[in-house]
Image (cartoon, rainbow, N blue to C red):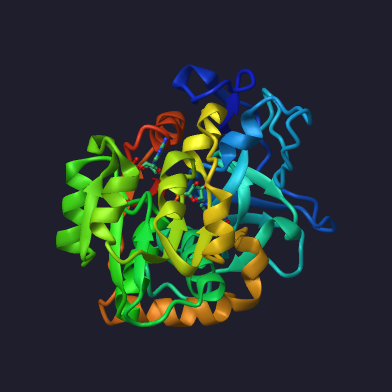
Length: 340
Ligand code: NDP
């Protein structure tokens, strides 16, 4: 059974040499009376949040880790779609297709609690259940609609806008009738946002010298809603450009994951006097709106109103470079490992 491990705790930005592909013996059968389930991965998601699990943890800076740390040599788990190969659990049967938290491996031995959902409909490609119909879609939906309560015509700014979550936020905002500007890290991504995904405007943040002035030029009257995927200086600049009663959804702070020196330090007087509502969140907190999100998003997909941007690799060996690439902006859209 091929599986991916970290060789040591990851320092700063992840590198391919931090990882190793291991091969171990693995029995493909379970005891009939047990509640063990063996899943063969068909599709694996690589997600930026995993970096926090791979770092050496210390409580000295007061960081609260909502995710379980990964120890070197230990199998890494994360969102994946798999096919049941053997099951001792009455609810799951051979050949069931399931979405859950499985190992970055060919096969995983799991329990019922690791399975989020049995996939019953095959209307869409399986990979969609890891992106647009999975946690990225739910993150976009909950962080935008539930937390920011956007209104038609409002001005929306999205960072990492061509990424797995950001591109969906921008498209939801356009479907609602908002004015949407996104930023991304290359001209190719900027063109995609404007020409394929219908953003009103977009810019390459790597080419901007003064982000505060850049945002002022795109939002002369201010920003109503900022969906933040990156933190750092972009968040400082966005806060400086928010309108009174603006809302900021802090989805993630990827620029800070690998460089804590970049930690954002917004002007809190702006926050107070403009009565800005800033809210961090985690997608699993919003499983209560999952069905509503899933139905609406499926409808948008059926009618072609929502476009899906995926970036697939196809082997276990490609997992380290796929993961490392998230922090270099290599991916366009949802990064997945398609093993089917
Ligand atoms: P993405 O597909 O957006 O991949 C990461 C992208 O982030 C890269 O392609 C890159 O695009 C951009 N990026 C990388 N490093 C930097 C940097 N230093 N500064 C600015 N942009 C950078 O992944 P996701 O959509 O999965 O994740 C986006 C964010 O959302 C992350 O912070 C993640 O942790 C968070 N997240 C949070 C969830 C929650 O429950 N709260 C759930 C899912 C994701 P570019 O070329 O534009 O730089």
